[in-house]
Length: 79
Image (cartoon, rainbow, N blue to C red; front, side):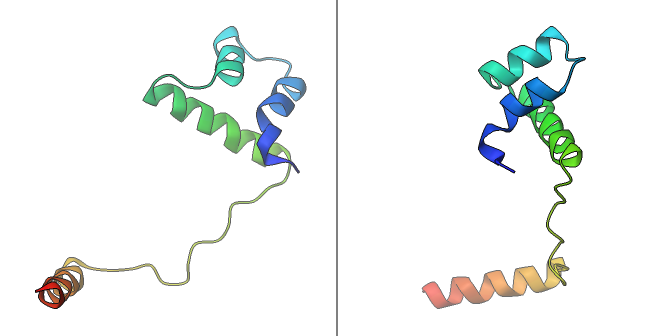
């Protein structure tokens, strides 16, 4: 599936788009909230086309103590 032309595909496959959605798909977002709305439409387009998001990394946990220790080590290396 061509992700570059998803907006045009979404316009062609969704019959019940309101005027604001159509304008947003054609002209692009002009504010943060419009970008959020466009992202939601993109996720719906992916769902409609059976595109699944990539799985998260196996271990992305961290804590503040380890992060601060790593930051201090990096600071000491730069001195």
